[in-house]
Amino acid sequence: MDRRAVEATAAPERTAGAAIDDSLRGAVQRNDVPGVVALVTDRERVLYEGAFGVADVVSGRPLAQDSLFRIASMTKPITSVALMQLVEQGRLGLDEPAGKYLPELAELKVFESFDAATGAYRLRPASRPATARHFLTHTSGLAYPFTSEIWRDFKPRDGETYPFGGPLLFDPGERWHYSTSTDVVGRLVEVVSGEKLEDYFRAHIFAPLGMNDTFYNVPEAKGARLVAQQQRSGARMDGAIELQSSQLGLTIAAPIGGGGLASTAADYGRFLRMWLNGGELEGACILKAETVALMGENHIGAVSVPALKSALPRSADFTFIADGRDKWSLGFLITVDQVPGKRAPGSLSWGGINNTYFWIDPRSGIAGVIMMQYLPFADASALAVYDAFERGAYQLAKAKQ
Image (cartoon, rainbow, N blue to C red; front, side, top):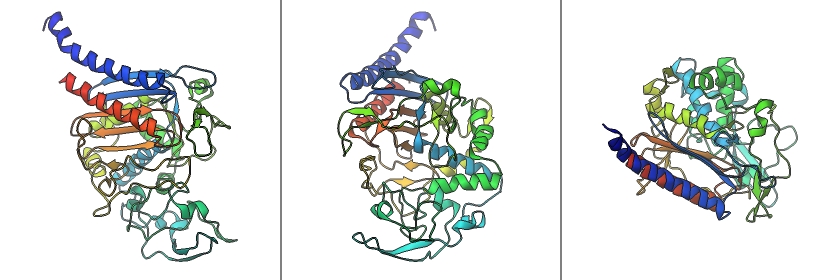
């Protein structure tokens, strides 16, 4: 193919990439969001990278493609992969009681009643043990204070302790409820492997994949690249973006499986490209192809994922979920319906509370990650930027064909 033919072939891709630039830049210029970094990849290479806006609304420090974001619950898929590596090795089973490895889970209690006015409650023993599968799928019965008014208002009696936040809302396997379940998955990784979580991730996931900018504990030399913790002002977090009153340090005393990592769009893009390639990237095999396929299947059966109401201002309602239709795999939300111009059915996704998001579309062979850094989660402006970016990504993939 001569030079003019190559240029003619590349022109639609450049145009589609420029359209994404314009979309993201426009969102920043309109003050919809303070800043955004985004990346699109297929199985072979990065198709798009862009960085717009500021990393700190006070100093005006510009964002860069290698800016480090607190990815919060985008830690969860990495923790899930870690546990499935151990399942592959036969070191634990998906349907074994988790209490076999974590004795504190051997006698779980379930709320029989909770009085919202007085805080009085009654508990009963869980009808069945919670398994690794329950924790990987958020069907354990656990919750978060921002996803459950009961957990938000619950105050344990003297002498009662709950290692992962509180009594169960329901018996394991009965429903889906977003929760601290992946914190349990992280503890299972540590107990079964005998390694601390960050050490395990580094040796078995980050180093093999070349994810050299992903950490719980950020090296001091890279600290200046961290994006500031920001939020919308006002009691309901619906005003202008401002700095949070306190900023996280570089170190985390006790890393957990459900959140806490800092990463870049490029690093997380390598994780996504590994997934698109059935568990391998550039000669490094993280998971067997059959394990990747298994993890992408529906593991909650007839149970469905509801669009949750938020119980705290730090998160908006989970309106991005197709209420009662979406499913959950071993670590990811599964999109069931085709939305014109966006991901195909069977795509996997999730996000982090600071408005970082990703999706993996095995059918179309592309994936994307978009990172912002402010509260509340699922902010309407952030979701609009995400939606426009994803649509642009599919236009880009179409232009590449």
